[in-house]
Amino acid sequence: MTDQLQSTSTTEVTDPADAARPSPAPHTVDPTLPARLARRVRAAADAQTYDCVTPFTAGVIAQLPVSTVADVEQAYDAARAAQTGWAARSVPDRAKILLRYHDLILQHRDELLDLIQLESGKTRKNAFEEILDVAGICRHYARKAPDYLKPRKHLGAIPVLTQSTELHHPRGVIGIVGPWNYPLSMSITDALPALVAGNAVVVRPDEKASLTALRAIELLDQAGLPKGVLQVVLGPGQTVGEAVLDRADYVMYTGSTATGRKVAERAASRLVGASLELGGKNAMYVADDANLRIAAEGAVRSCFSSAGQLCISIERLILHERIADDFLKHFLGRVRKMSLGSDLAWGTDMGSLISQAQLERVTQHVEDARAKGATVLAGGHPRPELGPYFYEPTVLEGVTGGMDCRNGETFGPVVAVYRVSSDEEAIALANDTNYGLNGSVWSKDTRRGRRIAEQIRCGTVNVNEGYAAAWASNGSPMGGMGESGLGRRHGAEGILKYTESQNVAVQHGTPFKVPTGVPEKVWARSMATGMRVMKGFRLS
Ligand code: NAD
Image (cartoon, rainbow, N blue to C red; front, side, top):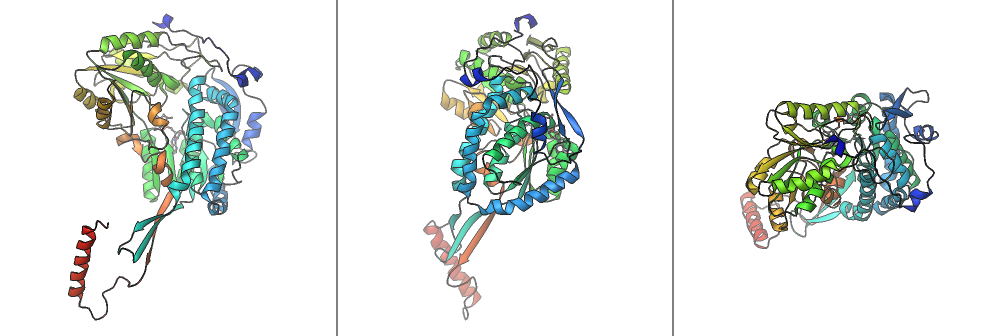
């Protein structure tokens, strides 16, 4: 099996922007970059530093400063000072910056792709998803924020006499802690709607994502974001990350369910809101009428994108028994042909895991399943000759309840195959998890697909796609049910959560009191009649 997986990519450079680039030394960054980026971090000049490491080689590519809790406090002071002037600007004025940022992200995509690849170990194609994501979020909120945030008039308590207006005020300073798996997307996209809504932001990107995040923040400055509005601190989650979230007027956290619970408890004790984007154990169901060739190609992307280190990637493949063997022929054929490699170039199918800890987690899940009787249909081995943390795309069958990978999130390139005899059985199996992040259904009959999708208890369900259709539909909410989180990104919910709603109600004419000289009982009777009239006229 191992031999059939290709170890290097065949790369064709077709983009003129790529062709014009000088070839960088493999797996290094421009030596002047870290010092320049470090200036954007709120940290002392003599701060301790940490090593930025590329998973492709485990080599150090840069050093960046570590912020302290005192730096976090200074960041909040500066953000609060800048927020008032920022909130005073109109929404369209703030939104213009996002449109400029959209263009800058696309224009600088090649250098961003290099950084994303170097920091995360993923392929260029998967890194490009992050470029598309940031550009899409910019465009969506730049165009839609004025509508999402505009004051809305509602029918008041007494028609005509009461005028109620719903307003959305920025909360103040939003604290964001991002994970490592999507260094660009997960460091930046949650900040964009928060900023357009008139908030300032203090962000702590993951230590394994900081170079990309800082370069992206430089571009946001270039797009016109006023000084002070977006503060960056760097350092470990348990100290610096926690300090950021403990001071926030609203908490935006992405990471594991275990950490998310702690974050939620701390936010609850301060009575501030929190949005938590956590783990998943996502299922894809291939119905007996699916186009098997297309579904198999979709399954490869959905299971192994970013080497499975994607919260919405598929770890459970549920197959209708009538098509299971045929589907597996298509799917396993593709999996075994996948190319693995570390080129900073197009054409490779799968890259590296992020770290030794991730390699150990993936290896443990596969070995535990193997030892307890599961069959390895493809992959199942580390690939140290490609880089220290490479692991093959792996397909298991015969996974049962006692195995760690049955219910626990692997967060790696491992998928388990299950067979079912009906749609109902597939739905029950897909829902047999405490998580509820993403799901996928494949059927040529899209009505059947929708019907199944609506019964899967997940924040997003894709029909005839694995994850991209829902993820990139930026007008619709995205997030987790159950242990996959609280709150949503994208769409109206993804921006209104960063605001305090306020109802300003103006009363004209008679105020809400029993008119002088009218007995309360008579007043109550006339009010009851009024309520019936309003019901009759559908005034509610
Ligand atoms: P993790 O919870 O250990 O760490 C995630 C982030 O939280 C890291 O940046 C870490 O530094 C920070 N952190 C740790 N303790 C903290 C604390 N007390 N306060 C504040 N921040 C703290 O998770 P991990 O294993 O590194 O990341 C993988 C997990 O993240 C997976 O479960 C994955 O599904 C999840 N994830 C979810 C999404 C999503 O959008 N739903 C996206 C990416 C990753």
